[in-house]
Length: 329
Ligand SMILES: C[S@@+](CC[C@H](N)C(=O)[O-])C[C@H]1O[C@@H](n2cnc3c(N)ncnc32)[C@H](O)[C@@H]1O
Image (cartoon, rainbow, N blue to C red; front, side, top):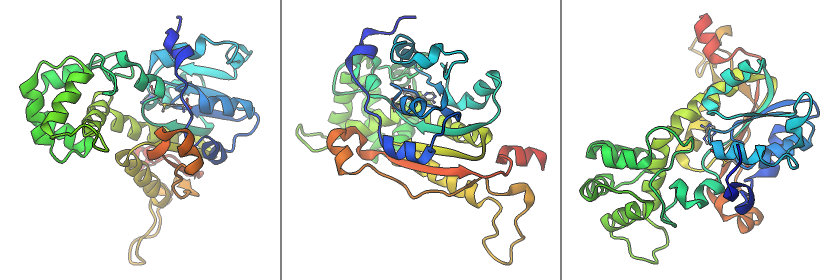
């Protein structure tokens, strides 16, 4: 498969919090690491350079094709055995994908949740409102698109999506305007409808369409369910002492990661001396949960898109994964 010209030659994706992610994973020669969100391979490159073997997942066929199309940059693909293995699938299927490759445990998992610059900057992928393109937003390039959703869902469902995933306080008003304007075919049309509903004045500091675009993208790609399943998959796959690093780009996702690590690192801990002692069957699965890390001034100056990024990381204990603990109980 040849990669689209634009993916290989045009827009670089600047890896976010790269040094911090690599420090959290602390890769060693011979380690086996899952990069759950390959993108342009910024993290993968550094993991390979540290001597790790990387199994990289991406649900976007263009991202996988762009790496395959560049064997000079990715010689590890052709090594025997390969030190870079590509999995064109969702990271919610991480454990299955690795099992199919004959691997049950890994030393690290990194997830960099969200869209890449290549996806955002290509109008034809339909993620952005800054440039006009077909209303698509599907990372996997299959299944129902954003246009299917905005033109087919009922008003109440659209309002719920805008409220839940975009934290749009005027979700009902925006949903009403969307339904009245149907059919909507392009990102530009949708942006105009949302702005008009919210009384946007050109030049205002933040485009109010941002929240609705984020919400529809999260819905179309099932991103929060993917994140839940990815975190569970990482817990299943990481060996004792293995490291998890997760970068998110908005508060809904960060909250999920924070709660996951809080629950995983305190599982079964008695919060009161009157409560029963820790049961061996629900011991904490993560420890060493690090404080959230955000980009510093220097990174923000070079890469403004990193501004809402948050990194959380932790180390796997030797307790069985909680889904295994529950099914054994
Ligand atoms: C922010 S980019 C990753 C950038 C990468 N860390 C780098 O340095 O180049 C996110 C990538 O993850 C992919 N992605 C998002 N959700 C995914 C999922 N649920 N399963 C697999 N890939 C996913 C997107 O297609 C995109 O290519």
